Image (cartoon, rainbow, N blue to C red; front, side, top):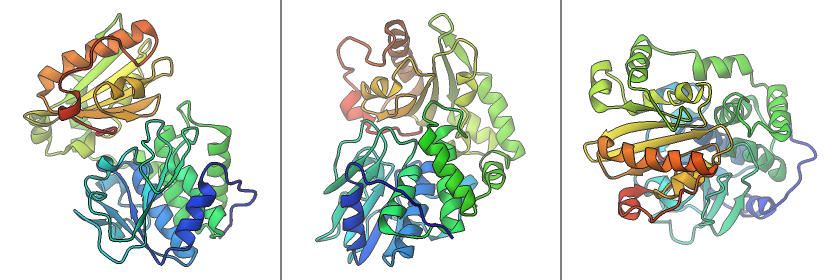
Length: 354
């Protein structure tokens, strides 16, 4: 075991630690469509609180994706539509707004306070206590600092969860948010017992044949526009059905169009239903895709964002591609022109399907 040393308390980390340390029982909540940072920070925070002597239970409105079930404690996450009573604090991690929790914040247990710990620049500061640091690489990095503020030892189980969270959101330290701070935290987590080879192998090296066949068929839909600066792929329900897979199995597919030479913005259009399309966006840095996603009711980070539109994929794609091409021409994410009529009623706030 190890305890983070020299941890500073900028922003509202100190307030978050005080609220959590004084709580008798904490519900730890992540966002829908969970990915490594969501699940890793949810489980990491749960275990940190327990190390600090606080009763904690993790919750999510969705199930844990199969590729993340290797994380210590993953089987303890309760899939729920609402939170139980008797909770003193609801700790929400990696969620830019309340709706990202899939309804878990619509009925807060009586008397409970909400502590919002997040690194999305689009965060709406919805908590009673808000510790929001957009410069952090991930919620997992923030949870490591929370452990220091609470005086909790970082066990190997905590270290594995937090390393997976950081690796997931930094693209294994390939993205621009791989900062000196995130690398120092990762080193501390390795010292605490996490093995990068095992974590990376579980995240990226345990594909099934069906997943690769699905990837091959999906890459066949790839298109380019804006003189090769915008690339996209489609994931349809028909393709998923043929492969016997789900949208969860397409996590990471967007990195293929993003890897093309000359591409500045990559998009993945995922058919969630006959009139529902999830859109994931990635940028190489010049274009702020969080601002672009904001036009459609979504959000995220400068280089990774998303949203959901209440329209068929075939209708959503040209609208979004036009906005993306304009953002590339302007070198921004905030394409000009009137907001789309479908944005508010048709979009699920937050980076759905990221």
